[in-house]
Image (cartoon, rainbow, N blue to C red; front, side):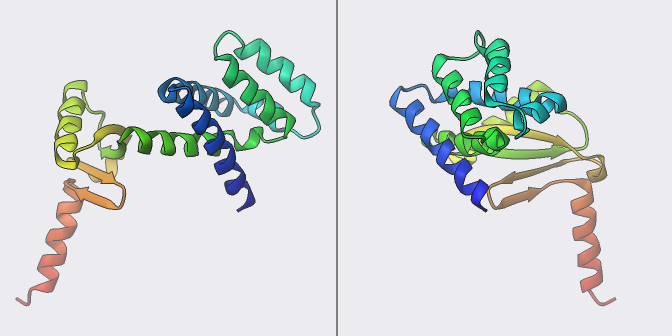
Length: 181
C-alpha cells in the first residue's frame, strides 16, 4: 500500500511539472518508453532495482543509455528515483502519470479484446465510433484472446460491451436454461 501511495506522489509530481510546462504528451511518451525499456529487460531491471548496487553506478548506466534519448527534466527525474531508491516504482509511477494525463486531456482508454489482430482500418473505425458514443477522445489498448472465438469485447471504465461469439453463446445458454420447456 505504501508503494502505491509513493508512486502516486511521484506520478503527481511529474504530471504537475509537465502540465505547467504544457508538455503532457512529450513527458508521458518519454516516461512510458523508459518504463517499458527498463522493465522489458530483466537484467536492466534487476540492476536498477537492486539495493546492493550503489546509486552512482545506476546513474552512470542511466546516463549512458538515456541521456540523448530523453529531456533533461526526465533524466533528472530518473536520477532522483535512483537517489531515493524508487526505481522499482517506475511502472506504477508511469501508470499514475498516464492516468492523470489522460484525464487532463479528456482521453479515455478502451480495452479491446478480439480473437485476432485488428487491421488499422477497423481500429480507426472502432475508435471513431467509440469517440462519437462517449464524446471523448478514445485510445485503444488491444488484446488478443482466442477463447472468445470471434467478435469483440470492449471495456471502458466499468462498462463492458460483449459482442463476442463466446459471450453470445453464454447468453443463449442462460436464456435456454431460464425458459421451462
